[in-house]
Length: 590
Image (cartoon, rainbow, N blue to C red; front, side, top):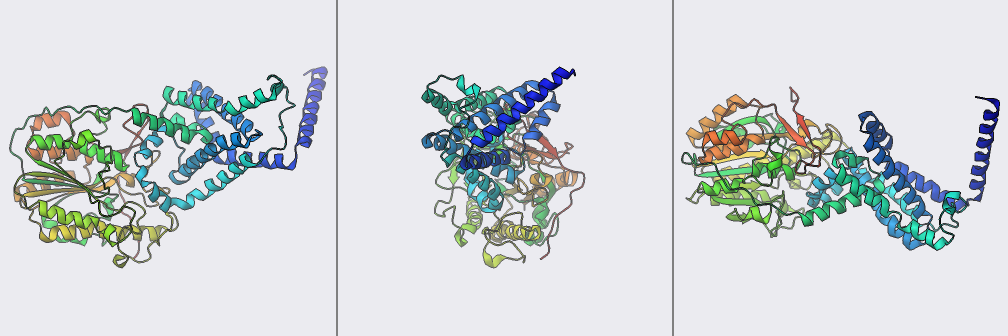
C-alpha cells in the first residue's frame, strides 16, 4: 500500500473514532441503559444466529442467505427505530408483541432444544390443549427467556431523553419534517413482518427457524391461524376394497394409550409396572417393541385412524378412515375419547369424519383440569364402559383413546398408589433428577396401564372379542434433552418406542396372532395395525396388500422407525428416524 493511501486510511480511522467518541458523549445514562438492555435482549434471544449463518453458507443455497440477511437487517433496524421512538404508545404497541414473540420462541428453544419453525407452529398449535401441561412440567426452562423478555420490555418502556440518530446523515435524507420521519419509524416494523410472511410462503420448511425471534413467533402463528380458518377439509374417498370373507371376530377393540413406552411394560421388560399382564399372558400375543408412526400425539393418532404411513402422507386427508371400513363390514362404530369432553375434537378429527361414528363417547362430568381421584379414574370408568358394551350381541368396532400418562406424571395417579418411592413432587420440573422422573413414570404406568387392565379383565369375556393395544408414542425420559416426545429435530428413538400386543380368548385368532408375533417380535409398527384391522373385518387380502403396509400376520421386513416434524403440510420438512439395532430398557431404583 502506498504511503499516501496509508495516511488516508489512518486519517479516516481516526476521524471515525472521533465521531464514535463524540456520539458516545452525547448519550446520557438512560440511553446507555436502553442500549445495554436492547443488546442483551436481541443477542440473548438469538443465540443461534451464528449457527444459522454458518449452515446457510455451507449449504450453498445462497438465495436463502440473502433473504436471511435482508430479514435480519429489517428486524434490527425496526427494533432500533422503535426503542428510541418518543411515543410510548408506539414503543409499547410494537414492543409488547415483539417481547411476547421473543419469549415464546426462547421458551421453545429452552424446552425443545431447537429453534422454532413454521412446521413447529402448525404442529404445536394442534396440541395447544397441552400448553398447561408444558408450563407445569418445564417452567424452569422458561425462566431465562422470561428474564430476557423483561430486559426487552424495559428497553421499550423507558422514555428516551433524545433521538440518538438525529445527527446521522442517513436520517437527514428524510424530509425535514420530524413528524414524518417518526411516522415512518412507527410503520417500519410492517416491513419485516411482510418479509417473513413472503419468505414463509416462498420457501417455508425449516428455513423459517432462522428468522429473528423478535417477529417470528407471532407472525408465523398468525399465518397458521389464517390458514386454519380458511382451510377446507376435503371429502374422503369411498371404500373401494371388496369384502372377501366374514369377519374374524364379533367385537374389535383398539386401545390407544397415551405416552406409554414399550420398555415399561412387564411382558417386554420386567419393571414391576404391569403385573396383571403377566397373569393373563395366556390370552396375549405380544409383538414386543413396536414403532409409532410419529412421535407426536395428534399426528400419530390421526395416522392410526386413517391408515397413513411414510409412503402415503400426502393422502392423509382423502384416504378412507377406519370408521368407513368398519361400517361397510357391518360393524357398529364406537369412539371413546377419555381425554377430551364437551364434544371437543382432537387429533385432526373433524365433523365430517365424526359422521362415520355411530357412538361418540366422552366423559363430560369430570373437569380436565381437576387433579383428583375422579380425574385419575377416568380410564377405569372407560374400562367398565367397554365391559358393558361387549355384552351386546351385534358386531362392534370400538376405538379408545385413553387418558394414559401425558406429562406431568405427578397427579396422574393417586398419591396412595406410589408403588415406586423416590419419585417427583408436584410442580417439580422435568430435568431435576432422572431417577425420580423414572420412578414417577413407573408409578403412572402401574396405574394407567396395570389398573386399567385389572379392572377390564376382571369381568370380561374375550371369547368373541379382540383387543389390540398400543400407545400413540413413547417417552424420552431425559435420555436426550428435556422433551418427553414430539421433538421435530433430532428426537431420541424412545419417543417412538411403543408396546403392541393382541389379546383374545378366541383360540383360532390367538394362534394366528401368536404366529405373527413369532415372526415379527420387535419388528412391527403402527403402519401394520390398519391393514391388520381390515383383514379382521374381512376385506380382500390382495387389495389390502396393494394399498397398505403388511399386516401383523405377514412377515415384516421394513426397518422400524417413526416420523418427526409436521408431515401434513407439503411445505414442511420432516425426518424419518430409525431405531438402533439394540434397544436398552430403562429402569430406576425403588
